[in-house]
Image (tube, rainbow, N blue to C red):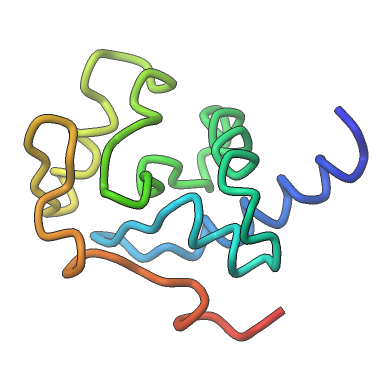
Length: 113
């Protein structure tokens, strides 16, 4: 992996580690916070690699519509959904219900980089 990608992934993980219990954010929101608004897909790749990192709650990162698009990267059929539901987030047909209530925007919640 290129050094610049490794640095970007590290920054993504630093943001993701701060997502509070019972809240979710999107790939795009993390990318925007990091000053790379058009890099939501790259944030997704970073989350794919976060599965083995216990400190990174990758299950709390979803697409902009609240869909669990990364669920196939978790062990077990519904692990991502189970983790979210254990935090009080209702998921129906792979989509977070009441997304605006659970959405955490790093741009608003964290100091600007």
